[in-house]
Image 1 (cartoon, helix red, strand yellow):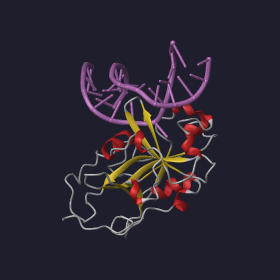
Image 2: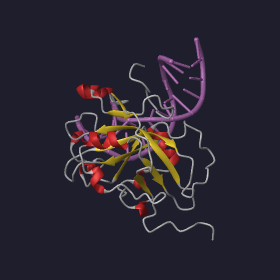
Image 3: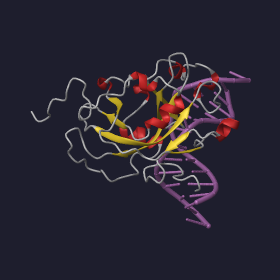
Image 4: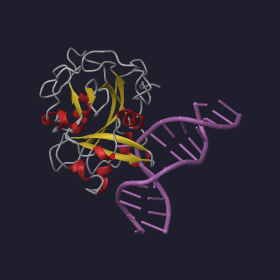
Length: 216
DNA sequence: CAGCGGATGTGCT
DNA sequence: GCACATCCGCTGG
C-alpha cells in the first residue's frame, strides 16, 4: 500500500519520543526547554499533525496558588503528583480542554501547560500539509487541544511511548530560538504567584497566544 | 478593542 | 447546592 512503514518507535524522521528523564526534572527547567520541541499527534485514520511549541507555562506544586495542585491531590489533579511524562488534561469553562505535561519525580506535583504551537506543515514523509501557514490554528491552549483532538479521554497518556499517539521529540537541526519569560495568563486570583514569571515564549513569534513581547 | 455569554466538571459548603 | 474556572468567539462602539 502507500504508507511506508515507520520504524518500531514510530518517531518523526527517526526522532524518538523524549524520554521520561526529560520530564523528571524541575518544572521551570522542563518548561523552558520545551520551547522549540516538536509535538507529534497521531490519530487513527488521520494525517499526522506536527507542531513546534512556542509558548508554555509552568505550574508548580502545592505552594503555587495558580496550580491545580494547590489543594493537594484531588481526583482531578492527582496525576500531577504522579509519574512524570504523562498527560494531564482538564476541561475549562465547560467547553475547552487544556493539555499539560506532568513533570518532577513521582510524588512531587508539577506540570507544564502547552499554550501555543506553530504548525510544521509536513507529514511524516515530508509532504506538505493543507494549511501550513495558518498561525492561528494552534494559538491558545483551548484551540490547540481542539485542533489536535485532545480531550479528557487522553488524560494519563504516557508521552514516552509513540504508541500513545501523542509525544514530544527533538527537531533535527533545530535552531536555538530565543526564549522570553512573563507572568502567566489568566491567574489573577493566585496572589503573589500571579506575579511570577512562569510563562515561556518565543518573543515576537506570530503563533504566540498572549503578549508577544515584554514591553507590550 | 473592551465586554460578555457560553456549558459543565470540580471542589468547597 | 453552588460559585468558579490555566478560554474563545462574537458583539457593539
